[in-house]
Amino acid sequence: MDLAALTIDRIRRGLLRREFSAVELATEALRFAEAENARTNAYLHFCPERALGAARRVDEKLARSEDPGPLAGMPVAVKDVICTRGVRTTCGSRLLAHYVPPYDATAVLRLEEAGGVVLGKTNCDEFAMGSSNENSAFGPVRNPVAPDRVPGGSSGGSAAAVAQGTAVVALGSDTGGSIRQPASFCGVVGVTPTYGRVSRYGLVAFASSLDHIGPFARNVRDAARLLGVIAGRDELDSTSAFAPVPDYAALLDAQVRGAKVGLPREYYADLASETGDLVYRGVEVLKRLGCQIRDISLPHTGYAIACYYIICTAEASSNLARYDGARYTTRAKEGETLIGMYRNTRGEGFGAECKRRIMLGTYVLSSGYYDAYYLKAQKARTLIARDFSGAFQQVDAIVTPVSPFPAFKLGEKLDDPLEMYLSDIYTITGDLAGIPCMSVPCGRTAAGLPVGMQILANHFDEAGMFRLADAFERAGGVEAL
Ligand code: GLN
Image 1 (cartoon, rainbow, N blue to C red):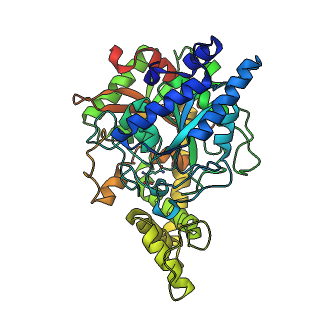
Image 2: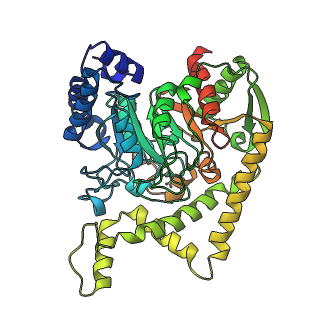
Image 3: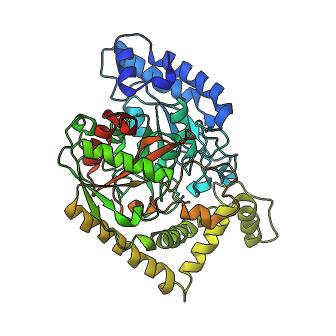
């Protein structure tokens, strides 16, 4: 069985025709993933008991001739910031190295109810803060396409697992680009749904007003299938939306002739690079498919990075206050005082990036600075969101690069946090506006490094976004030109 070539449909067919059982597939997938993991460090740990239990339930349903579910038998990897009952959830942090949640995230429960088989938990930047996966306390992930390069971050492990073929699909989380950027760097599909489309219950909070759970897959159809399963209102997350969930996969295979696609000039201004050339070729493919390409403007784009790094650090400083050694975190040696114990626990437990963000966030929220920074950033956020609402009155979708450059070398940007922050320039606007956006593979550079094209759509128009991405993929992407 060629595990790296499996799709949801292929697995379903194989199970229904009794070519293999779900337990056989899970056993083989676990063996393959464990063996391959030495190359990338994509998984932090595996959960064979849970995986085989889920696979057994699929086989039992098949034996009773019941529908085994839309994701029957599908091997899936889950980013380690998403809670799994009885299975360690570390958030890539030393502080949570031994944390075993007593409950499951809603997204995980839903995908298992649909027949999915969770193989293990994937590596990530500590508390999802980073763009290279180098902020993990458990070592970086290597890009399966080029092992001396980063896989992107923070969901680097999930992207690498799907690219490497050790999972068919994966769950990641995105606050400022952590699904789309690693998808782009590893050459897979990555989707950030509308804010509130997928329940955040059980997603360890980084910046609550920006956090999303979303799928990785090797093709648009599988990403659409997975999103259809995990999306929808959840009583356990009051910010989850009531909007009905369409059958995304059934809406694919449609014509995109006549669709209006906007190219925001602010995103293309400094794009004289191989990445830029590839994205322009991607646009050419859309043109040949009959899309109408429009020049548009998103005038407040220039404020996005400053705005994001104020809001996300503010929210992070508040969310991370709970890791104090008194509850679920590893406790440092007792200090003389309670404050001393907190200080030791947090001082030893958090890595440099988390500490930097807690300090920045505490500063921008402090009295005297709140109005100048936090409040101002919230106002800028509104303007950025309005830019998008205005644009979607003229166009159906917006197409941009995902990242200014392809996967960079391990260690290359580690000493310059600001340079690392600037690499998020094209992805954070979508999170600030709360709109759906995705990365779809858009060819490779001369050195063979994958580049992603970003598609952004209006709130809750995942279906329109998928349709464009699927048409692009079916046309053969830029390789077809
Ligand atoms: N790279 C961005 C950051 O460091 C985005 C992270 C994310 O989306 N979780 O904050």
